[in-house]
Length: 333
Image 1 (cartoon, helix red, strand yellow):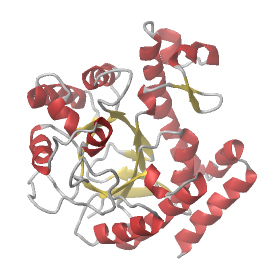
Image 2: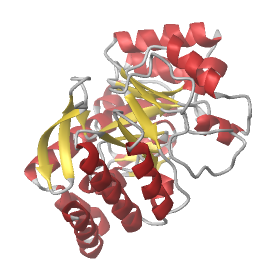
Image 3: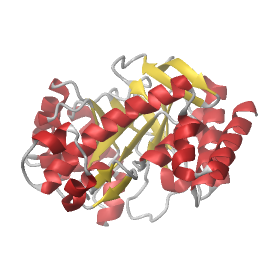
Image 4: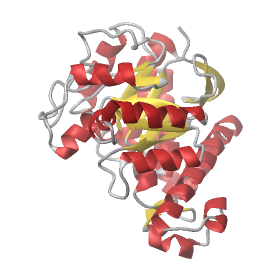
């Protein structure tokens, strides 16, 4: 069962095109839409992406039932509208929102209800027994109540771990449970710093390649461009985060700044040059355009084998060499 057709390789880094989803080109970024965003509600964010005709988004199943006006019927309507403009939808389990919001009103049955009602292209597995559990240490937990909408060609198994060893063990377990479209791991679960996290992701990629090299490796909660590039070197395919809706990407430093300071960065992108409106909205449009273009640049850098030059410019020679060495060692194991 092929999920990606691999187009280019550079050691562990790769670019690909979706087999079941031919409009998916990797590596790429999915802007996350979530009720924990401080700048706008989920419905407003969905409308913004629809108006921008953005090609990708990650949406929370919890929000679809509880935070979008008119509940599931409203969520089905606005997400169908988003898909109608060509947007590929990842439906997330909703566990993250429950943890941040401190609620316990979410269950596997709720998750299946939403996944049956709301149109989507990729489905993240249900990854929490109870939202009240502070830290999860386990592989996929969606082991009962199978649902017909959970096609293995479209389901990505979410895996957690309290430390590197447990995460890798849980990856092995998840890969042995049956066919899937890929594996998703939270950025924060991969280690305490960039090098250790990159090494862990490279090890995850190695384990996945032993099972099926066409599987998607998705990194949850990662939207820093430089970190994304490091993880691409390690073999990551797709990313999501709330960064796009919580600040403004300074194209000079590739860091987030306040939306009100965006005008001072000298950006001349289409959003900054032509759109008029509140600073926050312009910043989100600017960010969407940036991540779209940066994803394309990542694919070119892998193809042309220049991604280490990019990392060198932002992380320095020694860290770039350490990252490449760690990823290359994992690729050879």
